[in-house]
Length: 158
Length: 240
Image (cartoon, rainbow over all chains, first blue to last red; front, top):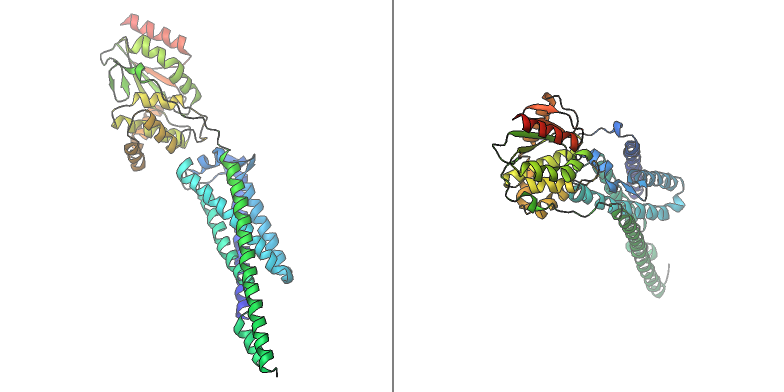
């Protein structure tokens, strides 16, 4: 029972992180095309947004993030609706956020050492992806955990 | 109740099942990690090609040989004309002036002792303009402004596209023979930022709102191309 409650709590956290991710990356996608809407507490947002690395094969990186978070919400909702598919969906979500997480490390490295500018919204997006990876990694580990041998042995002994 | 032998057999089966489940978990998670790394690697590989910044070039040091310099000022300190340019390192017209017009101004007027020339920053085109202006001011602290100044203009690349990022400005410093580490410390400390801001305020007080703008012997003159500037200089020299 405790295990189920924890899993339910973690899937809710994951969903919350992904919804926050949608909000931030949707804003970043918007300001990619509407520079005048960019609100920045630090000075580097404009530089990061206008850098050649802000697009990937013509698609804004922010739009890719938006697509990723939207997919996580979709698969996360399906996971709650279809417990029979839960393990496979958890594994799929984990693979997606892990890929996003590694890409976010690369983008943060670019900000710090190549572009030399920090965009607060990009940092926030990266933090959301990394947090999602931790949550989904924990869920994947728990979902695929083999049955406890002691429980089985107790059952056999009775 | 199961017999003792049946119980042992069942335990062995349960252990085997648990072992299979453990291996399955590791294989599935390992597969997910591998897939994620392949996808991320593909994204990174595609994105690293997004940067089409040209490789850096360095200006010719020989152009400045034998000409006296004092920080932002180059040329004979007693020259009859003192020409100040207010420029932005990201402004395309300034880059054209710096790379195409300035060499002629240098050889025909500055090296001849007729004009002393000063570059001052009106850094208004964004973050990279300010960083470049601060870096150039840091070069003065190392005693060699002009080669670095010309090198920045030689590597002009759009506005806020990473062409004048801090890392590229540091590379330019190294190419220009400056101490890259000292440049980095200077930039990181913000030692020259107030100087750059003051120059911008000064330009605003002079009523300048575009770059390049020029001030000849205290009088603002509009930039209408090299021929017009030459005529203005020649006329001013004739008056002196």
